[in-house]
Image 1 (cartoon, helix red, strand yellow):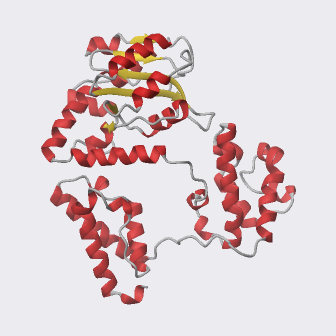
Image 2 (cartoon, rainbow, N blue to C red):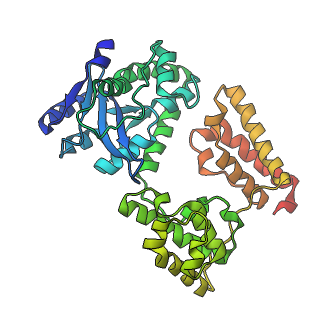
Image 3 (cartoon, helix red, strand yellow):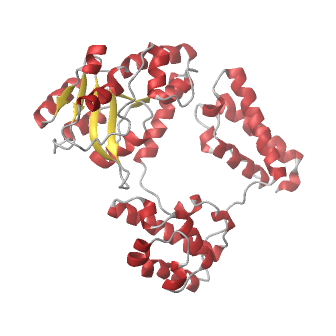
Length: 383
């Protein structure tokens, strides 16, 4: 394995890539990673793609190879499992670069949590835990767009896939022994589905900090402003905050400025935004003020202490189940799902969120559902 890590194979022609992809398509699994840059852009821009096949490490140059269709076909080949560690940004990178998301997927970070190895473990820590090998972390903040890459960069990049298939094999054994492989497969399939889902901007405003404090007429400004911010950031491929900071968008909605002078008084409203987008922003304010119907509803306020007690009961139930089932609590339930369940109880219509269905339902979802029903029956006035 040491030889593989220190002697990666550089791939920078379509012919080489096509030949390798044809070979890899015959394998049961391949290890994949990406190095990308996005500090100045909205989208992650791939600087390097690493593939490990158990025999060697290959560094694919996406800057030199213009036709990556062979790789795209491999990534969606249903017969080849794509093993990735902490996949979210890699999936986003591939979707932007190739228009596809790797599948079937096996995320070793997710799998390690299900195998009771550790929750949210970094790749280096996982390799050390499973193989006793210390990995070099020296090139974490490298410029992956520069050419040529240094030997140190290439070595670091190769390490990211050199041991991944070995770790995958060890985790697979543990998951099968625990009868949790299907759980991981379902979880990874959901990660793929989320990454493949069409972009939705309509609810972007609901994620703004303190948006719950705003009234419908103010939300009527914030909603289109956030939609515009998302669409424009993607169109120009620039970070959202370069267009307008989230806090500034909230203040625009709260204050309802009608002049450039009033707009410029808002904290965080940069000169670039004022120069290029002042009329656009003021237009959203003017449009919203003319609307009298179909205003966005107010968002849910934070739970009161009494309502928080209901949430605590759900958390206690989940912790008890996790201890009995010997499952890491963080993967058994998510805070947002327990809060959604709590709000349904408060409304007098207990409903189990989708996040507590699937493999989670027989493990913990059913018990939470029964508790929700019992809480409603005990407190009929909550509705």
